[in-house]
Image 1: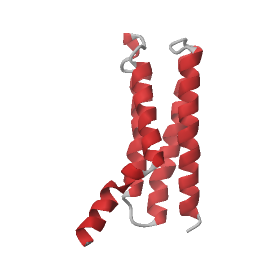
Image 2 (image 1 turned 90 degrees about the vertical axis):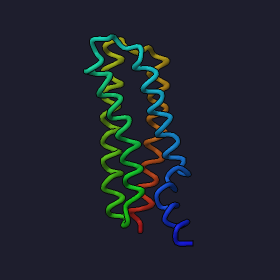
Image 3 (image 1 turned 120 degrees about the vertical axis):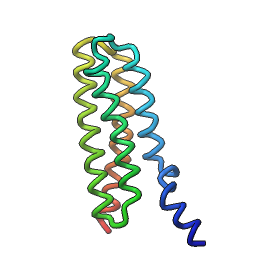
Image 4 (image 1 turned 45 degrees about the vertical axis):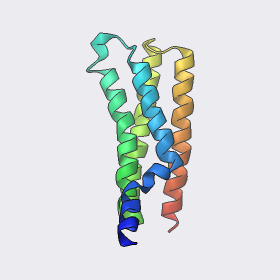
Length: 127
């Protein structure tokens, strides 16, 4: 029984809709940035990918923490990375690296993750 509970603590995040949507956002960012100019590989492409991955990684790390306060610390970092991604999406549009359809897809996916993340954080703040 204890072994099952411990395993759940380490993998239970996979059952979160938030986790699934954040992973989908990472995949979308990778697909879209794959078409960016090669000179952006170590610039905007890298930054967008890293902050998208940071969102998921911090959700998972927060999930594995024991207290709501510790969990929230990582979720705040995930929220910061989500805001950072918004900036990069805007810059990508201004630089014409993404078209309006891609911008809309990214904005929608980012908004979904943001809404779920906010709800998860709120549920922890009320504990």
